[in-house]
Image 1 (spheres, rainbow, N blue to C red):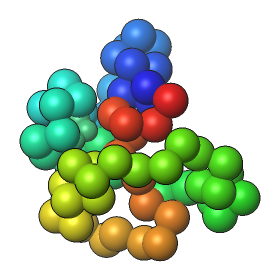
Image 2 (tube, rainbow, N blue to C red):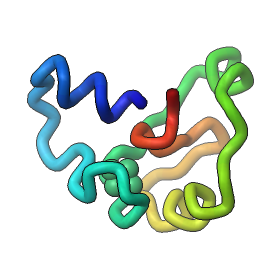
Image 3 (cartoon, protein in one colour):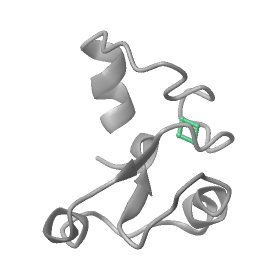
Image 4 (cartoon, rainbow, N blue to C red):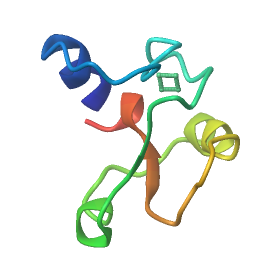
Length: 68
Ligand code: FES
């Protein structure tokens, strides 16, 4: 997942991925360009529910811990 990339590359993004990918936080919220978003795997219901709680959600938002 993109959360794995952040962890493995030791990227210093404050607070990103607080729940370690267990769909309990939405701190991994990312906004994609539309053409990239359209190529991602569909969201599961749990991601949709948690994304609803994220700040500044757009129509191309995803949770980075769910994007492979
Ligand atoms: Fe918490 Fe993605 S890391 S929902």
